[in-house]
Structure formats: C-alpha cells, structure tokens
Image 1 (cartoon, rainbow, N blue to C red):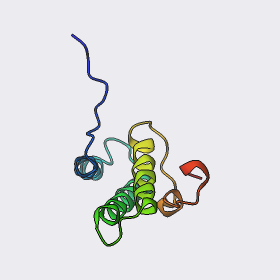
Image 2 (tube, one colour):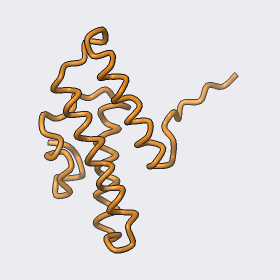
Image 3 (cartoon, helix red, strand yellow):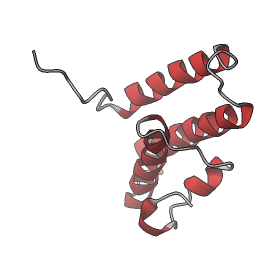
Length: 106
C-alpha cells in the first residue's frame, strides 16, 4: 500500500489549526520532549505572524498581491521549522520580513 507523503493540508486555515494544536502539545510536553522555551516562543511567533498574514490576505480591504506574497512567506517560514526541522529564528519578526531576499529567513 502506498504511503501518503503529503501530510500538510492544502487549506491555510487547516494549517493554522494544526499549528495551534501542535503548539499546545509542545507547551504541554515541553519538559519530556526537551523543547526549550525560546523555541516555543519562536514557534508561537511564527504561528501568530502566519495568522495575521492570512487574515490580511483574506480581507477584501487589505488583499493585494503583496499581502498574498507575505502570507505565503509567513507560512513557508512556519513550514520550514515544523516540516523540515530547522531551528526557529530567535526573533520570528525577522523571518516574516517580505523584503528578505528570496523569501528566506535570515
């Protein structure tokens, strides 16, 4: 039987829901899973940035190509941590900067 490798929902709203569930699990099991407090704070920051960017991209009054690109970057930054195992940035606001070259975290 083929195993599905695409574990991430296509819906940004569902991705945020999953992120919040994980964030709760991480904070609940921080000691037993050895999750440092700065990592938790950074992940929560990435989730908050993604949520704000999604709201801006969905709102008729603020939806622009720039808002859509910022939303994509915010979710890419979150995914790079949870999906690829990278260390979250100390300051998640840096990673959400749309002027960052190639949309990559610094």
